[in-house]
Image 1 (cartoon, rainbow, N blue to C red):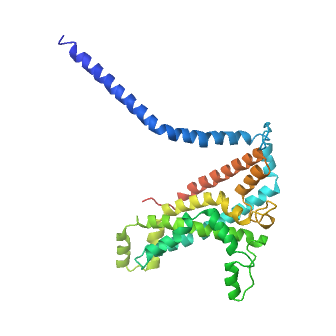
Image 2 (image 1 turned 180 degrees about the horizontal axis):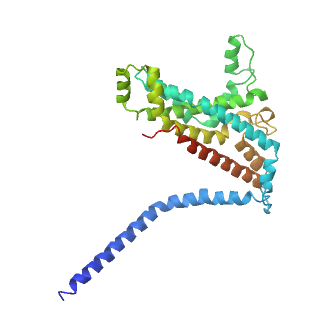
Image 3 (image 1 turned 90 degrees about the horizontal axis):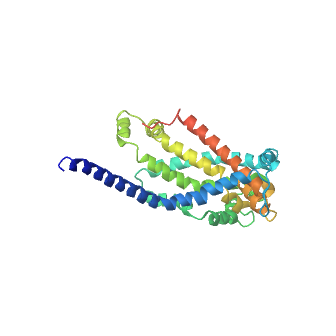
Length: 313
């Protein structure tokens, strides 16, 4: 009996240990189950359905039929698609600069110990939390050529009013203005968070060596903020490529054009118009997957190029 007891104890201990590990796995799976179901139902399943529909002639109602790559080939020969792509590219390139550089400058200024910096931080961040559609409709009134406040100020300086929303030449510029106005505050907060991680000893050492404020910004702040700048550039570019609410709220007309002569039409409003106004769900799904491939390609390029200028140490 004295020889059998030591052999039985490890087996019992092992079963208890295994049972405890199984209970831990069951508990962990139970806590993750709502998230797994949410991702499955609201992300993966719609993603798979969209991919399937992109190869069909599906409309809003009716049975879809497989058409192969016809929707993709149709998009590549559609002048409206190229118009939307050109507008999206121009909008993204300009907005990327307009909403990043001022945000960095504001963050550097508001990182200093100046009077009222908390107030000014809040003022610049308010557009971020405001309703996109609400503030865009407000801008629609502000930019009105007849009674808008912006043109009222322009007239005070003796200039002719600008047809922000009624001329194809100014349509995309209006979208850039409103979108950048909303984005600068968000990017400013990201830069402010990045500035908190810059060691103050670097600035103290640079000051002792006689470096000016501009030299400190150029050779300390900019390199130390390179990971933050990279994050801002990637997220802002993705948001620009997916812009929808601002051009639609600012430029949707009764004839379903986005701005005069579709001057505000970008790729997401185009696929929305094809899907829910034209009822061409299959073609709209193909546009969505083309946009996904473009975003994926540009993001991979950004990550590849970032190795040359982003410093993590």
